[in-house]
Image 1 (spheres, rainbow, N blue to C red):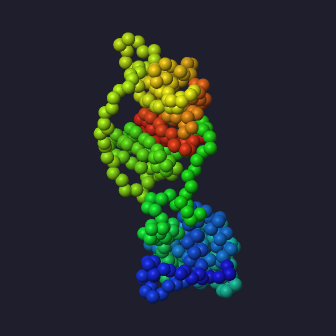
Image 2 (image 1 turned 45 degrees about the vertical axis):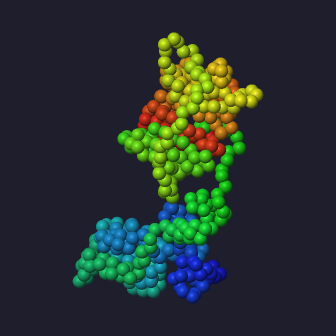
Image 3 (image 1 turned 90 degrees about the vertical axis):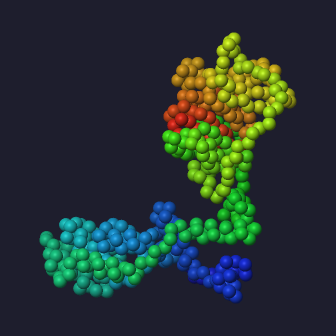
Length: 425
């Protein structure tokens, strides 16, 4: 790297400016920036990328997740964990040589001769020991060739536990503990400061890479939903009873059986923790009834549950049509006078297996009609022709409802199996 430091200019109203008084500059070592990225790569298990960055920059992370845990591993001889973590430490060669030398001893004591030989031939600290202290390295070579392990000859007046304690004392002064997720924490603090200064609206969905509010993702055409996109697990006592997407499409809300209203990031299937909200219930004012429409094919005295009603633009001309979902194997598109325009039915050959409809939803452009059944199936119809496009099982129990994203080909379904499941095209 060409330059190992960078000067950060701080405004007087910046927190760093307050701390440093009259100083307007903070010098940041570029190695620290590399270490932030190394920690991020390590925590996300991108180990090959981490090694490549270390080799390219010649900078080691030089920190462990927990100093206490590392020293405990050292004291109890958990060498796999110890050696894995020392790969990211910048320790003196003499310290690492002492560690690897002792590990070879213990491998020989446990009759793991092949492991001891592999360490002796391949571990960088021991290869360096061969150059700096040939006699000490030669002694290790001789020990690997002996048929029996002589603890008295190896440890002398001390013991294995005493040697481990010495290593613990040695590494205590060479190991640094760093809080997890430092890169994300610093970025979060920077965004929070921008909010406090009025440069970023609270709750805004921010594109960190572009340095601007995130653009809405909009699908250009309605497509049939066919694939799973995630799921949200509820307990058996908190089965979801209602779900809906926000108008901007960023949030999914749920109301559950135990009385909780929750807000979710539907793409991550996790709670939105940046929101402070209250759930309020309002009484709606009554209005005059303009028309009464009964479900088609209803016999005299028969009651059929109407589980969902949707107003949709008329297929021809202006005005609206009425989409009626009944707890039967059919949904209907009706005129405002009650005339049946189209019928959306389950496959007659699988009618019993598919079950009865319990809810319906339209795609954003009104091209597709989705219905879920009490047997846990999602059926997709073309609205204009009533042709069945796809059948997909979306619940292990009975479905209770569904909702379509306002401008994405994404559907959320919920059912008695205590899951909210996300589906995509």
